[in-house]
Image (tube, each protein chain N blue to C red):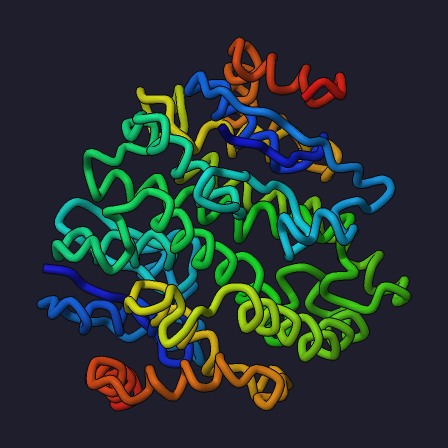
Length: 211
Length: 211
């Protein structure tokens, strides 16, 4: 059986939703960011990177959301969730998820995790990063709006592993200072996702602490 | 036939090497970063993100190195280069490549592309980012050394799509201020890669301008 290590309000929600989508049997372990439990010796044994999420499987431990999403789709015999029957379509899925991880999520992280890239006590630079986030995250969402999100789902008519990933990142856009009116397709997608039973269940589990 | 848009000294080398590994017939187009050709109207039609690389296929245009590497392996019927016969092993490959793209490459980018995350005229913050690069890139390579690189290749006995990706990023570690002596396995891997005929050919083509 799978065990998902998660923390509320982090990217772990994407994998959590997908586990619900495929009807997986799984357990969860909540990691408390407030007490920086993600950097505790116990959690570092699970994920030496000290990041969320981690997925414990019978074969070993997986990290990195793009990898975990494909794995869940394959492990539960739902390769169509990653369009894996078609190498080009699969590559497009992977390109979107790679962009979400290495561009959009990275831009977002400069608001609260700027210490990764400048000294933590450099208040000027930390603040400068935070000021840029509305622009950098906004441009990333604008790119998604214009070039990637086909509608009604990210890849078009078929729901894929891109959808929970984009949805999770879109949870944070107002806090990042992005104007929702500039990205109507992203906002419609977020609303559409929020109405799915699987999404409601994953969010409720994370917020209730019953995970 | 495939066309690879590349620029010397960028991450496009990873895909370039893999095209040589699979014996692909392909053409190349060199993009000149010195004249910021990657943001020219012509190139933005190829890749609206204005980044390297892009791979033009009969089906459409692909971007994002982790996606392109899997695509090339599949398109040339070499799925074993991504360990795709085993969903868990494939997920491990994807996890490494996701880490390389969203952690190591991102840390590196703060040395020369800091303007993505702070205002370009904020000299203090740009310099602060540059000063942190030896530490942030160094920690990322240390994580790879300790947790990911199995040897002799990244995934162990089998050469995979992780190898040209790590090799390409490892080209830049001295310029990033990382001490090679702290990461002997990464350095051995880089040397091992540099001796492959495919790697020599891809590098020579990029540097000669003959693509």
